[in-house]
Image 1: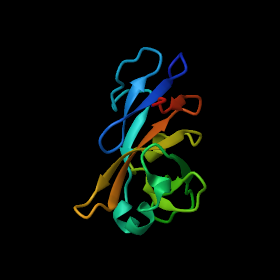
Image 2: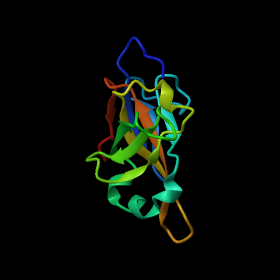
Image 3: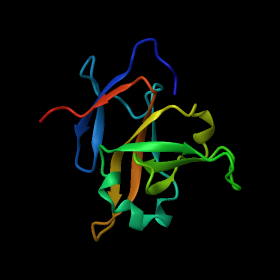
Image 4: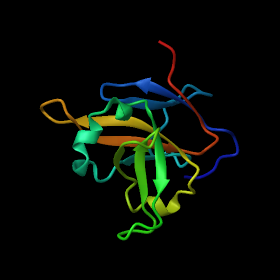
Amino acid sequence: MSPGSERLRIWLERGEAGYWLRDAATGHALSWKDPRLLVIKVAGTSHRVRELQDDVFAPGRRLALVREPDNAHDPDAVAVWDADRSLQAGYVPATFAPELRGDEQAVALWEFRDAGGRRIGLRALIAPPDAWIQEPLP
């Protein structure tokens, strides 16, 4: 994520399986590849399918990013939890975890469901700590 000179303001616009991103200042669509933010597919969700069924992981819900410096497999590991840190969804992919500063915001952005309707995966938005993220009013 590259810091910008102006505070990033993001509207979450409802889509079929989650939210699309819109620049609140201009109204233009934001690409998931915008350098001011990071959109990731949460890793390791296949090990936490039961936890993923909880509404705390529904698109639009806030998430907590928790560093795990004592993780035996990866000292740069960053776990993805619900906002209250009671259920873990998985991890930030190892390719992105080292570039995080530790103060970013995270929101469940998009969900993947199986043929039976169970949530089996998530995409998450990771944004700078000073970004303004808001779902538009209906």
